[in-house]
Length: 145
Image (cartoon, rainbow, N blue to C red):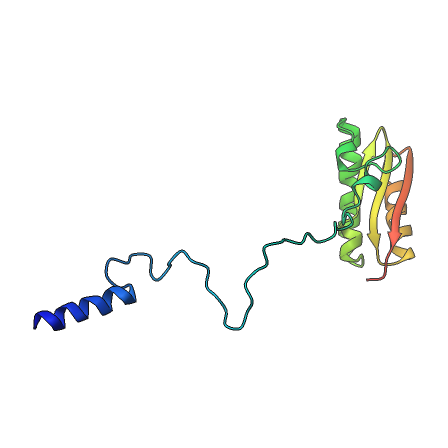
């Protein structure tokens, strides 16, 4: 190969980035999109979003959470028995089967969405039927499926 041809080939190869390039074309620069204006120097901050969670509603004595579950053997057994009764009922919606069952000192709190008033009533009846339950606070909410 002639020296001028070799130099030209090396120059072309170097300009294409194929000599010594081990990052497969990543040049470290941000690609530009044709006909797109460059980003402005001022940044705009979107308005703060409303809290999507319901933490405030869930964190009070009137609305116990799973963290408020009693740890006594009786409370744990009551919760397990109610949960088993709900899951064995194949007519319950998925939401109903996933409702929160929280037992503390024999008092059961039921929380979460259910598909109908019938499901709400059925879950409450299942809770009241378990031995050791001294009261049921039914906070289940009827929601359209």
